[in-house]
Length: 306
Ligand SMILES: CCCCCCCCCCC/C=C/C(=O)SCCNC(=O)CCNC(=O)[C@H](O)C(C)(C)COP(=O)(O)OP(=O)(O)OC[C@H]1O[C@@H](n2cnc3c(N)ncnc32)[C@H](O)[C@@H]1OP(=O)(O)O
Ligand SMILES: NC(=O)C1=CN([C@@H]2O[C@H](COP(=O)(O)OP(=O)(O)OC[C@H]3O[C@@H](n4cnc5c(N)ncnc54)[C@H](OP(=O)(O)O)[C@@H]3O)[C@@H](O)[C@H]2O)C=CC1
Image (cartoon, rainbow, N blue to C red; front, side, top):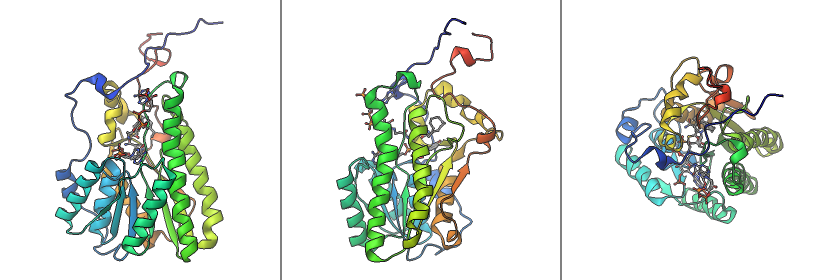
């Protein structure tokens, strides 16, 4: 039997690459410049709740929904990040976003959140479960706390949000719409096993609920982004970021606006017959490449290192 090969990558903390890393993702100026194919007023009278909307895709989705006429509520843990979205929308669109700082791992806080949105806007039309994240690491080195943090955020947190929203829709006899932001996990993703487990859970939870909850006119769909350049890239080493786009045959990164437009579509009447589906938005990554977000282990290097 071959001797075990040495694996170089271990653990990466965002501070390991120093304090002067370039900013990633669309900044506020870039967000303001984005155009949309959708017509003005497309989401008039609709209310959206977007989690994780203090940065990245959630912030872009909140801005686009507000531009299209929706009432927008947002949540996330960091009140300052949420405030930046509130300020951006007020400045750009002229409307007030309802920000409710909430940790989605806390089901009681979610009960309060959903109640607050209903009280404030008189209902909720679309719940966008975007809050989430993970860190890159070889699975064999996951600490128990790290594993639990990723599962609790991405699987449990998303579930508490779905269940609470659906309870209100059922009680009120109102239709509902859920959009879960997951990831493209169908081939697995080395060094992201925790999030693959959680996201696969959300995808199949969503497919199941799409059937169970159809009797109450609640639709449930997922969007699986590939490499989307956002503030969240700070979780990955510069060495890996330089390779990320090579994991799809288009050799490019998507941006937060790409995902925001897919969310707006699923929130619109045009998507009324889409239920239980997963929209993959990854430039073809699923058919092509592997990322190794914590660095390529020697065993898999093509330069003959092992
Ligand atoms: C989605 C699939 C892609 C997976 C990656 C593959 C790369 C694909 C290409 C790019 C795709 C990018 C996908 C993205 O999702 S971009 C980023 C989205 N945003 C984020 O991920 C940021 C949010 N992440 C987090 O907040 C944390 O990672 C976490 C989810 C764990 C939140 O936990 P918590 O708030 O509790 O945070 P803590 O810092 O207290 O950590 C808790 C314990 O978790 C362990 N941990 C945390 N960070 C690391 C690390 N860098 N390496 C190893 N272990 C880590 C650790 O045990 C923490 O506890 P201690 O600090 O007490 O030890
Ligand atoms: N960027 C990419 O390439 C990909 C991203 N994704 C997923 O898409 C979603 C958006 O990511 P992206 O915009 O890139 O990254 P960001 O890190 O910018 O956004 C994630 C947001 O989630 C919020 N969040 C994290 N944990 C919690 C929690 N426990 N409770 C409430 N809010 C929380 C964060 O806010 P705060 O810290 O204030 O709570 C943050 O604003 C995430 O689920 C991400 O994992 C999936 C595939 C690819």
